[in-house]
Length: 227
Image (cartoon, rainbow, N blue to C red):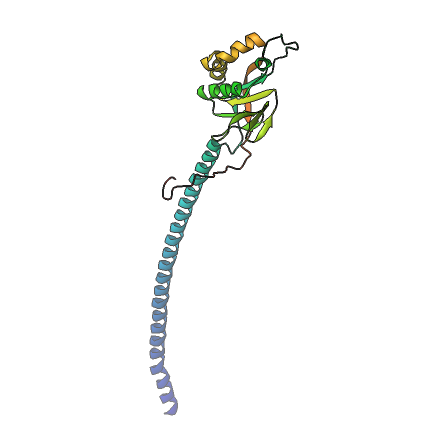
């Protein structure tokens, strides 16, 4: 009887144990499925955040690229970077006449600052995009003036020959220097006193950057205006 009772006890407990195991497995599967669903949602959220960050980064890089491009253009316009391109090389020099006739004014035989200014303004009027004079870049606040017999540009003393590099349409620049009414007085002096001017078209004219630091004594920016 004892053996039979023991056997019966084993037979009655095994189905209950299997049911418990199935329930635990089912519960684990449900839990794992929920965890997997949660993880998928988290992965989706992280991917969305990553895409958003990538888009923001691309937008920031685009804005940075636009800002850098704008800054570069402003530097070009301000004369702060060297430039090259087609144009003309204009050389002014004093007359080589060794014996000036009595009664003639020696000033007729030398290059003056107004000759250079006339040449520069003529080139600008003909569309020159960048100009230098004896290696000095001409910008908005540059001036060509004379102290005694010395011509000064950008606080630098110059001496002849005076070489103007101008970038632009070489034919238009050449024609302007040879035919512009602004150059008529100089061309008359060239014919009479042999002051010299040559205008050479060139495919590769180089103009250096403006080397002086821009200074403003009176001008200040207006807040909230400009870009």
